[in-house]
Image 1: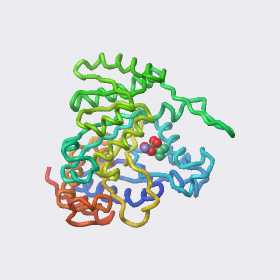
Image 2 (image 1 turned 90 degrees about the vertical axis):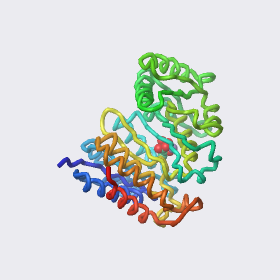
Image 3 (image 1 turned 30 degrees about the vertical axis):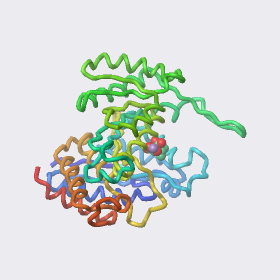
Image 4 (image 1 turned 180 degrees about the vertical axis):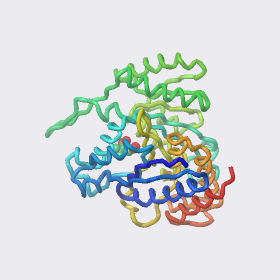
Length: 358
Ligand code: IPM
Ligand code: MN
């Protein structure tokens, strides 16, 4: 029996609640599909700062590196907002991504038919939306030098090298080959030199994928087009900060940021996490939506562990829970048959996944 080693990082706020539900669902499909999972919990974020005085202890990096994949909740909260930057939870996460070399962040945005009324957009605009944001994750303005601040000035630098653009572009084109074979590369080439280089290199990579249609779009226009006509997009290829912003925007097509998963991959271990944050305002109330994290666990099975059937079962179970009318609070105003808590939703999905015949 295959047994996988998974590093669990629950983090702050609602992190622990949503990870517990993903573990419940993973255990359910592991037993029906005949594989084992060994979890090792390690700390990151505010909680790691509280315990170790460091948002990213070395043990967390080491454990992650020795695992087959990392399942991650969320980090951050007001409590740590006034710490010096390098002690903040977010700095821990950025360092973690860098250490693991996860340069590609895949953020799918799909709309469940069952939740078509949950979006703030009209049903006909969003029905059938199925897009993938491929976001560069360990470069760009998040990491560029020089950066700093003094009393009257703060500065950051957006840098991309050709090789950084090259490798993320390959991920986007490969993803497009499995999808609708369209890549829209997002930049601000009308203003930024870094975007000019980005565009040039994406054009180069495109030559290796003659079947894929490549278009370019300025980021401001892309933000508008995502709301005007999201179905025009298949794969959106973006740098770090543009992808951060556009993927939050794209999540609202689906009705709630509590629904969307992500996978961060590179050459080593992958990190699987919901795209939402730690939501400290609702932590501990049992009302957080665990679906984004459960869906991230499904991406982990699919992309890191190659347990495709188990991943399919989870995806089917999520769709079934929604079509049966189960809703957590964030989506409860839309066609709810029953409003359920975080852990009820986890149990419902775990049961459906275990019963699922594939
Ligand atoms: C995300 C988050 C992070 C980011 C923060 C918490 C550093 O917003 O994963 O999208 O900006 O990348
Ligand atoms: Mn973000």
